[in-house]
Length: 323
Ligand code: AVJ
Image (tube, rainbow, N blue to C red; front, side):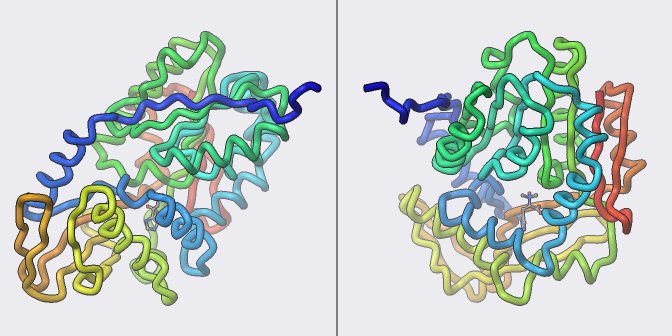
């Protein structure tokens, strides 16, 4: 009997695999002053679920605003990107955003890249049977330091899909490095482009609420990074002793998230001990906001010559196709 459950996708693991190195980097970040934890540590399975919940909060507008732009301009955007190509989903997560595009852009291949292995694995298992004509590849990778997919991409044109305003996690210089690296991959495959969602600068009240919601889901998402580090590296962060801070830093044009120590305390990071003063903060995330012209300039600086833009009715969120 033919096996009707044949797995229609493959997973390539490009995560560092260097646990000791990762641990050392995390410890170094925590001993620095100010201390920091990289946002990639939000996304263990519980963190992915909490992020899914954030996207449903009344205060967190980016996801639904972007979905509305995609719906409204689906055909125009699909026409800009073209069909039958490689669709590269950067930070794919549960792959729901890309899933809505597949019927419209009919890619030959779908390449989902994300730091969260279990999340893309589950998503591809769900999607593969729905798109039997699409070759599906999941890549487990942290692409902060470059996109490790040159050997996975073939010579066909590629659409690089970077939705959700995830670009906001990069500083401006990091964002430029990222955009240039995408442009370079696009240039080697004529007809390629970048489809990206970018959150706009807006009033502090709206941004403060979006990153410090009434239900406390964003607080849980932020504090879960400590739970994740405890279980991953055997640290002993006391969750009761750190509170969430999430606010718009208008001068820097970015939302910042921090975990603030409620009291003076010691945390065991393996064989070392980190003392935190009362009120001391661990920085966990930046989420940069851009004016449309500002981001368009960055795209041009990265080398993209042709740029199309779609905006939400209030001009608070933007989608660009740059080629
Ligand atoms: C996934 C990076 C786009 O910055 O808005 C949501 C993450 N942090 N609420 C964002 C996040 C707090 C999100 N990105």
